[in-house]
Length: 163
Image (tube, rainbow, N blue to C red; front, side):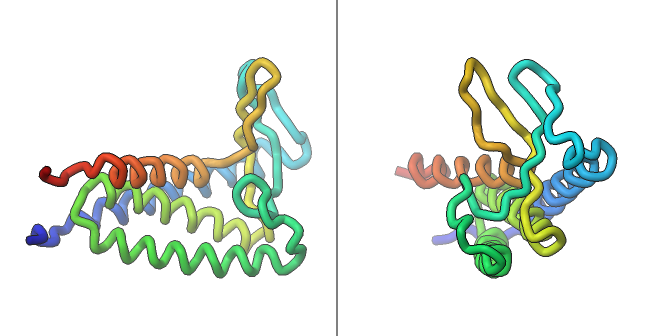
């Protein structure tokens, strides 16, 4: 027997809005206050730079060879996926799933807005240490990765399920 649906989805929507707003504010700051596109890269800490990357592809640069159609295809795909995840969020009974889906959808919408506005996603967080460097990413990407990690952990450990 499924538990009664509560108003918990509201917290997912709040998470979605927060992630979206923080993501867009950080990108506004990078583009209009720091003027990172003109500077290229700024060292903040020995392991952390602000590095400007216009990501026209998807995760890790995959499918970047699609050219002018890429942003259109990625925007449509991301919008459909975000809609499906939003519906899942509204139907979720577990608060951690609801919040993680809110983070994923908020991040996806942030990146969708970039693709519509600029034809590419604004990436600027660059972590590196001892010659090792991770891909440049943004707040939306971080929210998506954290949300997916929680969903995977929930599925793997079956949290909230009685044995």
